[in-house]
Length: 427
Ligand SMILES: Cc1cc2nc3c(=O)[nH]c(=O)nc-3n(C[C@H](O)[C@H](O)[C@H](O)COP(=O)(O)OP(=O)(O)OC[C@H]3O[C@@H](n4cnc5c(N)ncnc54)[C@H](O)[C@@H]3O)c2cc1C
Image (cartoon, helix red, strand yellow):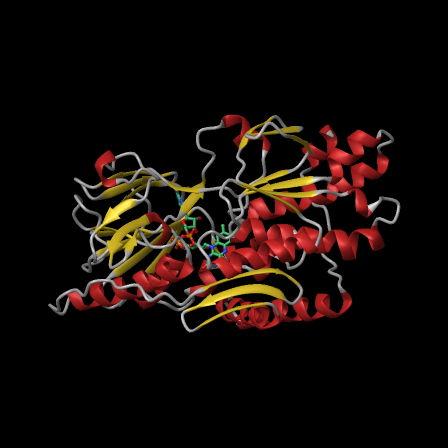
């Protein structure tokens, strides 16, 4: 059954995914020339760079989740349908979703990526991931309920397992989470859980490569490690996780670590949709595109952002961060708007604006095209860039207020456990 959508004479552009790429495109596409349909499994856009702060009770989920209907309020000829995309049928130009069939004239796939467990089902089942607001809230509950449970436990080894945690993956997500946990241990734990010995909490950061932040400069990699070690994080590099059964992590160098909480931030992979031929995908499931983001081998199907793989200039696929997604979406909107006026499409060229990662109070690393810096200045830059990128004035103000408050009080007040009643009953 087709999904209920108004029929018009304009060509229909279906945008699959309302992430950075999807919303940038939808905002800029001409609604006089095209009917725009946005499909997403969520009714909100999520700002992934600050998910770790939700997990650490630093900011409220609503500050980084922006309702799509509000974002596109008043935009005519644009329709939002909340649905899970299941398969794509390029020959007949339609998608199948959880809610039914959607026909398209032009399809833009901007569905991002998902966590990569490299086929290890045990690790997938037993670890936490951090890709969505739901993941962040689930992790927040686990952190808080493990601390509460630790207070009720008499056996030292069981209590230790509840206090300790390991983060796998030394990219920006792993580094930012580890720094945030270390500050939690230093500032919050002694004040709010005085019956627990904060010194007992071990935070392990495990990285398969030889250095942290391997897409950053050497200075940034070295400095981030120094910062984390000074905060008491046990940084383990050059070692892979072989298995984790919910209690014991087995490392490739033979070491074993014991913890109830492992956060998996060690890789991402694109999403494969039934109906799109194998040859359209790279090994890590990105869709191969030409310089106009058109999926090679398909007609009228474009891919943007994390989901797309484009070879351009020195890039064998752009970094899977927000800027390529935004820049590609801007260009595609110009190209599609120009198409109806008979203008030729322009090829994509990525402008690298640099990379930032924060480790904690006054500590960050910044690799910008004109400046490499670490410490307070980098931290200020990180604050500014993230605040600027959050959608909505109210959200900017709330997040800014939260940051200022926690900077001076070293506290946040969002440590609330919200659990489903059947889970609570089962525990
Ligand atoms: C924890 C974390 C921290 C990050 N930190 C930074 C950072 O500091 N700086 C930076 O530049 N980048 C950062 N990134 C990366 C950045 O968020 C991504 O590169 C960016 O979101 C990519 O945008 P996108 O539009 O391609 O995909 P996304 O923003 O991931 O959007 C994909 C959308 O598709 C929807 N979707 C997916 N599959 C389906 C389906 N089958 N059916 C329906 N809807 C679907 C999703 O719900 C989502 O809304 C971070 C990512 C994470 C996870």
